[in-house]
Image (cartoon, rainbow, N blue to C red; front, side, top):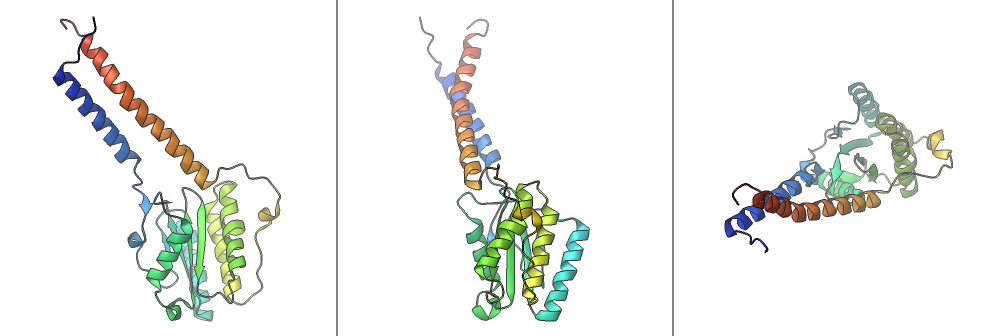
Length: 231
């Protein structure tokens, strides 16, 4: 004869299950996801390393190089690192919003360049008002070959950011583009997952986890209840 669920037991089991799902949802929420409003306003040649990717000495050296560039040419470069984006955001859209918020008019944007790096997915983007020197093709090469390739082949954040800085400084100084580091010339098939693949796999895993919890917890609680002495 089946044992009916006591109403109080059923209510408590559902409350417990709901609490567990809510706790998992809050724990998995993008607490470190960056928004444009969270990024402080730039100072001259600011390096805003919210993801803590650069060592202190490399931050100092890069700042000095960027200050020298600004003094000699008037070109100002800003580096921003973040942990991750909001789930439905893209690095290109984020960097464009930040660049526009900092420098709203074409006149303000004219001598400004912004590089943004999201460390969790290894995504980067460049926005610039100096398009006569920093063409879209060169910007794409700096992002993909100079900045992101060392990250995808070993997580070398200091090297990637310093190399990107050196290349930006050379180009914005009016020198010939030195090109990407030698490692970018190697024709090696990438073995890493794309950001979209990573997000899809993570989402699938956590949906399965939540479904399992929602199914198993009431069952376990029920059997624990009916198995108690005197029930």
